[in-house]
Image 1 (cartoon, one colour):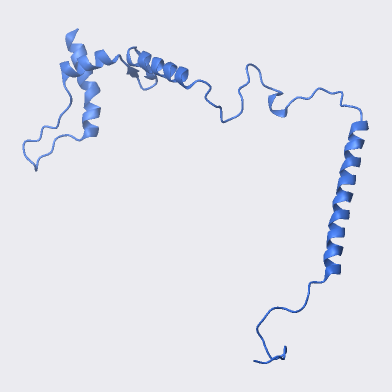
Image 2: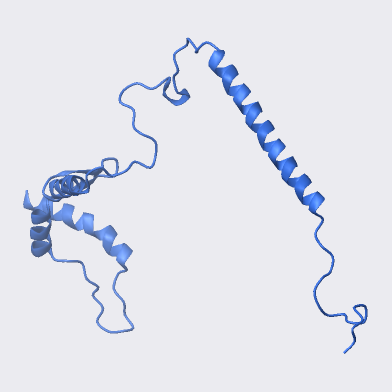
Length: 158
């Protein structure tokens, strides 16, 4: 084993860190932090000496609104059980009452009990195919025929 330090390439680094640079960086950071603190303190002191604004503050979005204003989206659910109960009440009311779905095309909503009675009386449209090669009317054709069928029954009853 050689005692010569130059001959061994392995080992630890013999050069020390430069203490003067480390102290200089610490002093720089300390002075920089104090200067930032002094600048902000002066700025806030200047704001305290200014008179408060005299005009009333109004948010820009609510200037032209009339009526109750809603909070911004997303609106949080305050009472989930009450909301569910109100939703179910609306759904039940729609299931058991008459109303328009689309007035221009003449589509109405009827109570579910009446709809079930009509299905039992008239039946559902089916395809009348006697064998596999011969097909009945398509679903679209059945949908088109259904209102005509119902109108002819209604006119025949009167």
